[in-house]
Image 1 (cartoon, helix red, strand yellow):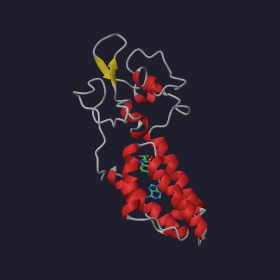
Image 2 (cartoon, rainbow, N blue to C red; image 1 turned 90 degrees about the horizontal axis):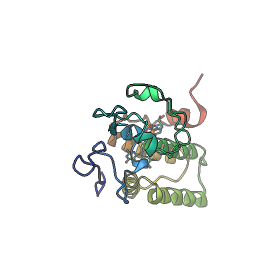
Image 3 (cartoon, rainbow, N blue to C red; image 1 turned 30 degrees about the vertical axis):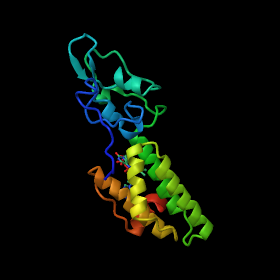
Length: 199
Ligand code: FAD
């Protein structure tokens, strides 16, 4: 767990935002700390001015994720999330996109790491992991990852050890988020991140 809990929106401080969104150091909602589905719960005035509805993207979400294209329009009632079909390919990253992309990079790099890594390669990998734990743009994620590395230093000796170590660190995040643990058996890791499933 984080040593310092991230600041979050509450009904009192941010009446127009869903409670529980993580705030960044600038006091604004942190895009890379929340998923776009979290933003999409933002309540906005309906077009006919009657009260509020769950904003499925149009004003609040499309605005927050500026750059969104191809928003289907024309619906008379508040569209469902699926109905909006917002193309988010060129939007700023949210927590999910950044997380999946970063894990993909890390697990894939581990899958191609030398079977037995020379000293210089181990130093490079250590520098990468330490830098990531300092620079990862989701602040609370970076804080926890730093603490993880401090408590369980990476096994940099070779491919198998590094892949297992990363798998365990990823599982710690999975557990924190209430997701299933991944099977860190070597064959399973290789199938997921290098060779693909056996035919
Ligand atoms: P992801 O968890 O991103 O996983 C992508 C794919 O990796 C999965 O589909 C699966 O095939 C595979 N996989 C899953 N688990 C493992 C494993 N243990 N080993 C190998 N492969 C696996 N989000 C937060 O909300 N809070 C945090 O504190 C936080 N900390 C993070 C720290 C780091 C260093 C990183 C890189 C990300 C962090 N994230 C955090 C983001 C979070 O881990 C997820 O990436 C994000 O929630 C999207 O999850 P997902 O379900 O799409 O799949």
